[in-house]
Image (cartoon, rainbow, N blue to C red; front, side):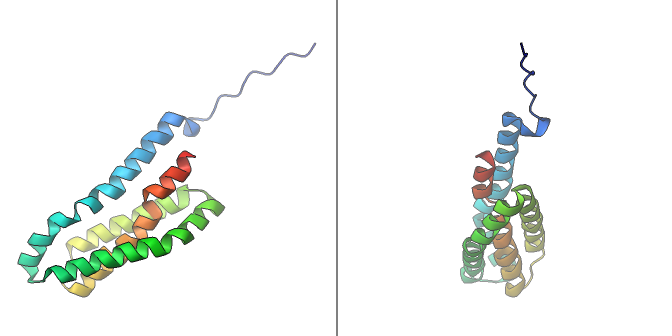
Length: 134
């Protein structure tokens, strides 16, 4: 009569509570600053003498690049797992936020807030976190 082997304990990294906590933290860190970008509009326009159109174009570039890059980031996540694109996306997103604070020309604002934040959001957005939850 054979005895059943004891069930293997899941590793620490596969704990559902840890996965949900990390996913929520990633969502907060990626969506929180993006949701508050409007607070920077008035101080930046007063300090640098730009109109709303400069800041609006940067946000438009961000949204377009976020949507354009998301299928490619999703393919990378399917191939290599979600950790790689989430990590790289988080680093690019942080670099975009840091460079945004040093933007003194419209081109620099478009490169940081538009391009870097757009690509960073594609890698660190909640769509990949939902895939990791699955």
